[in-house]
Every structure is written in C-alpha cells, then in structure tokens.
Image 1 (cartoon, rainbow, N blue to C red):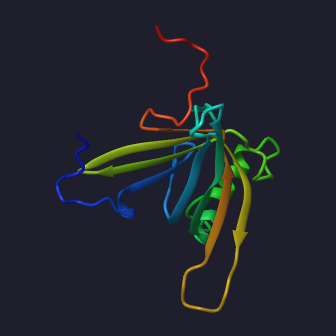
Image 2: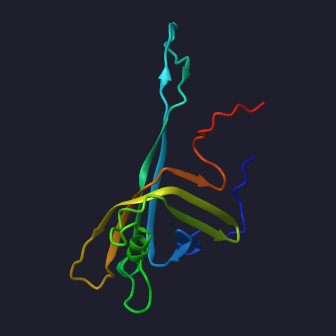
Image 3: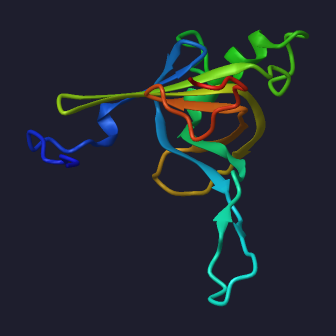
Length: 166
C-alpha cells in the first residue's frame, strides 16, 4: 500500500533550499524541469494487432528553468555576490558566464513530513532572459540550464551501467 497520509503539513515553496555548487541562493521564485523516457511499442504478427513488447527507450532531458529576483542574479553592490558573478568566477577566463559546464545544482526539500534531495549533474547555463516594465512588481531573471543527469533521493529514471546483477 502506498501511504500518502502524513501529519497534515503540506509541502510548500518555503520548504525548498536552492544551491549552486554548494552555495545557497535566495530569491528563487520558480523551478521547472522534465525528464522523459520515450519508449516505443513493437508489433508483430498477431490477429489482435496487440503490441508484443516495448523498447527500453531513450531518455530525453528538458532544460531546467529557474526564475529568480534580479538581485539574486546580479548581486547587491557591496553586500553579496549574485549567481552571475559566481558563474563568472567558475569560468576559465573569469569573464564568461556561459563557459562553466560542470556546475552542480542542488534542490533540497525539508518539511517535517517529507525530505528530498534533487541533484542536477553536469549543468551549464544556456540562456538568461531579462525584462523590465513599469509596474510595482520586482524585476526577475529567467535562467535556463542544460544538464546531463539527475538523481532524486538516490533514484534516476535511467541506469547507464553495464553491470548485470546476479
């Protein structure tokens, strides 16, 4: 039986901790990603035309999209280093924010009823979108990262090892 009843405390955004390479980042307002395993049905000669099986499939990873306050991206003068500066410091040339290609992004969830860790491996920045308009709302930056692998609480959607378990 899958037991989903807990202590009544529902997981919410305030239960998440967001880290770049071990450095905690505040001001993140949205995170989205998707991992899809495309599997194909195989058909053979049967009168019902029912599939006879399915392939192992191909894992397709969509980019991570992170929305954060502009000050979290740029930093606050004289007070903190933003994500942009952190990426720049990881770069070989000390200038380009898109060069670091092995950044670890870690999302931790801590709630009295649930604990979870999602580790995105081999991340690299592919875009940062900024916009501003006249309104009282804060300014946001949307970052997009490509990643090579994802481990959620020790589980992954695929296993690339060649080992045979006896």
